[in-house]
Length: 323
Image (cartoon, rainbow, N blue to C red; front, side):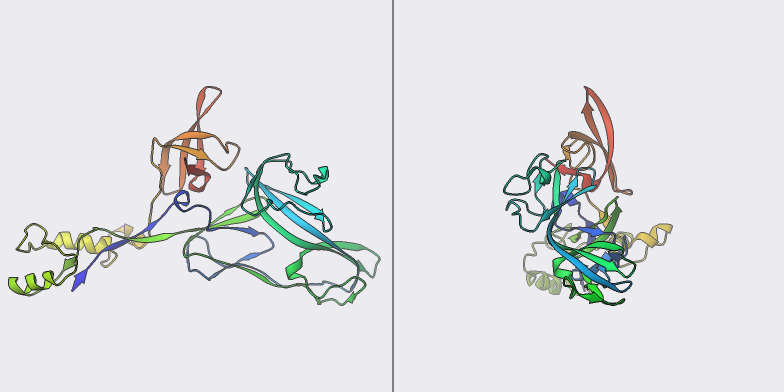
């Protein structure tokens, strides 16, 4: 038989960008489990159907446009803009934005970005005001696309649906990581790549004569020669083959480390001594030199020069980017 040993490697976010990062509001239930594998198309989180808790009358339905800006400390600022106003076309999810930038075409000062950050949400919503039997009112913001059959003047019963279910589905396969912040969870799917342990080599177990083996090798596309000799195969010793099989996950490792033997290796796309840009936290937009990489905790120490002195800053792998 032939063997091409491979290993699994977790690639860093700085290499693939933020395409596999998901903003999960706390009103969503996390379905996927942290530190476990997830496949493309699997559900990450789900927001259940929301029902009216008691009888009420709809006294107002106000159309609004919601824009959420994530600041460098990962906290969020929400802007609710009247539906009749026109939000600028360049206000798009994923775009960075400076403080002082107006969100509307008319430059209304009430809707000017207070702190620089990144736009993480832009959607149409309805502010529904319910009036209960005791005369008290309560307003709820519901995204337009998930709004149930709710109209101004309607009388609703307890248990009526006011907001439909929603799910967030993974667009990639990999290892799921979760970080919790004040306003939301951030889920990252770390891509897992399969790579050859020994690129350019094929291992074979054969009980053939030399002539038959040569004929077989000649029939393999791209095969050039045997290792150790051009014309005569050199057997691989038993211990060496055991090592290869263990690295490929084909043979159990007889040590305490065996429990983690199938875990993919973590690979980062930056190295100690490299200058990187910080993209998260109070030091965002600073550059610094990578001092230490801790793969176990998935954190990196960057030396940042502040007031002429170098200060160590500890960040997650997703807190820095290559220049």
